[in-house]
Length: 128
Image 1: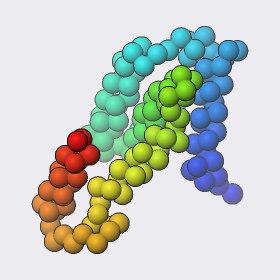
Image 2 (image 1 turned 60 degrees about the vertical axis):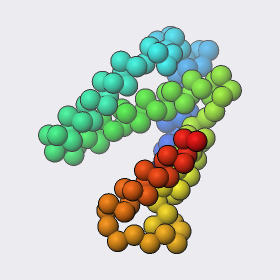
Image 3 (image 1 turned 90 degrees about the vertical axis):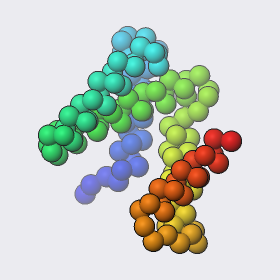
């Protein structure tokens, strides 16, 4: 039987928290958002390379590495009491729903251009 994505994500969050804990990994415990920038850039670049190479197996691995960067940064903020990974997930879920009114509400569109125009308009409103 396979685990659902939510359970696996929770396990990953627990691993990251353990690595950052007092008795965890010295390297992981020392990391900050700023010290992880190079890792974030590297992992993003490796995802792009896998896409450009049309290499699905490598893409799967690199997306995992990039996901771990997101988890790591969220863990740092959680330790500061600012937000947790669930807040990151909730925020993007709400944003995606809000930016797709042609799917999640009554907005009617007939072209990709209309979708993009709506997206830009919604994004501009969000920035206010």
